[in-house]
Structure formats: C-alpha cells, structure tokens
Image 1 (tube, rainbow, N blue to C red):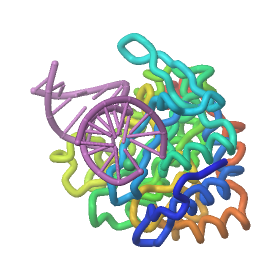
Image 2: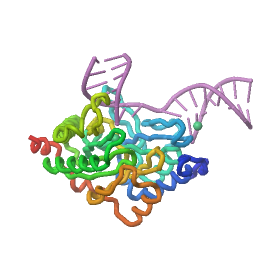
Image 3: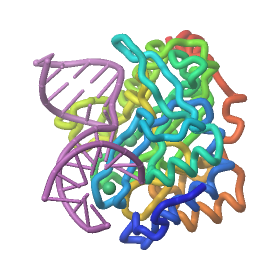
Image 4: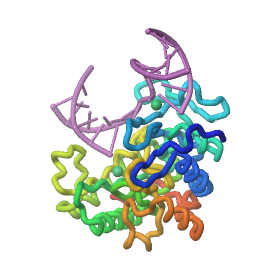
Length: 287
DNA sequence: GATAGTG
DNA sequence: CACTATCAACGCGGT
DNA sequence: ACCGCG
Ligand SMILES: [Mn+2]
Ligand SMILES: [Mn+2]
C-alpha cells in the first residue's frame, strides 16, 4: 500500500505522523478487522491533521479504487445509499492512507442491514464527571443486560466515555432493538436519576451522564474497536475485560500502551457473536 | 486527499 | 507550474 | 422543514 506524505504530522501534541496512523492500523488489524467485516462504515478524515478541518464521510469517493468493497443499502425515507465496507487489511490501510483517523461502524451487517447484531448503550459524561461514576454506570448497564438475557461487553471509547455492547442474533428489526435499548437506558437512568439521564437535549441533562441509546437507530454507528480517536493523546477505542474496568480511563490507551496490550492479550471482544442473545426474548424478560 | 479550474 | 476552490453524513424526536 | 444532538 502506497502512502502519500507519511511524514505529515497528524497529532502535533504527540508528534505522531500520518505514517504512524497507518502503522497503528497495520498493528491492530488482526484484532480490529473482525469488528469491521461486513459493516457499512463512516469514516472520519483529517487530511491536515486532527487540529485542522475534518469531516464525516459515509459514501465512497468517486476516485476510490474499484477493489475497495462498496455496498448499496436502503436509505430511511426511500432510495439507497452507497457505503464503504472494510473486510481486509489492504482496505484498512488504504482508508488510513486517505487520512481516515476514526472508523465508525454500523450495528448491523450488509447481509441484513435492518437486523442489528449488536445493541450498544453509550455513556456520555459532561465535563468534570468522576470516572468512578462512569464505571458504576457501565456495570449497572451490564447487570440490566444480564436480567434480560443479554451478554455485555465494554470498551473504553478513547474519548470521554464507555460503550456497553450486547451481541444479538440479528432476528429482530432495527426499530425493535432501538425501542429495547431505550427501555434499558430509561430503566438504568431511572435507578440513579441524580447521576444519569436519557434526555437528548443538553439543557435538560444538568450535570448528569447521558445514557445514549440513539446509536441503535438505523444507519447509526459507534466507534469501532481499536479505532484511533482524533483527539489529543491519540487514544484508541479499546475493548476491556470487566475486571479491568475498575482501573480503566476512557482515553487510557494511547498507541504505545495499546500496542503492548495487544502483544500480551487477546481481544476481549473476540468471539462475542457466540454469545448472541435475542432482542425479542429480552423484551419478554424486560416485563 | 483528490480533482478541476485559473493565472 | 503554483495556487485556489470545492467536495466529502445520517437518523430521530421535537417544534 | 428546520433544529439539536451524537
Ligand atoms: Mn487538503
Ligand atoms: Mn459517546
């Protein structure tokens, strides 16, 4: 894979270059690709580095090479949209060479775009939140998943929060999963209303952590495991064992720490699909 | 980042 | 040639 | 249809 301008600085604070970004993705590819395969992508590109202008890109550029996989999926409200899908290392490195710093993925795959195989609740803390409160909220989400028969997997987002994901058997429709995720979020927030909220509007959240279920809507995305974040520190989204959460920071895994981690430890999310649960049965147990 | 257009 | 302009998302709820 | 939000 030919990379233009590998010495261009992308993270001024860390002195990381575009070449370093590509090397990150080469390193994480074995752990990351299983979480990308078959999923429409949203790219977050920063061709002049993370402190310059960046943008979300969902549709393939006209000039993207023909060997890159693209897929047409229905658009809500009619018609179709074309998306990039990254199934292999060459594609990952090509997209990194296009200055894609962040990779975001759908919660369903192209084979069944309207049947999510993941449910995700996203914890978005306001400035100044105690990380202990964030960890407690993540564990409570895990416990509520367990009550309805769903397995829970946590990742540090590399930004300011955590995600708690549940693998699904991809039999329920998007809108059913969205409603289930909202019901779970509301239940978690109602149990600790001083610290948690599901209010979409910022002016109604106060000082509380936003338990965000909106990631479960059609064509919505969450940051892919092992994606870099376009923020100072160059942390990555990092799947964790629950036993690690007690000492975890959302942006705790920069490039060096992540590389050492992957050399030492399996992807905690590897094989998660084998624990897929049913959204329909979860609804029944929800009561 | 890549392309098309201008001087 | 150097330089500049232009482009690169979506869904959902509320109003 | 537009806004706020992620
Ligand atoms: Mn540029
Ligand atoms: Mn978030």
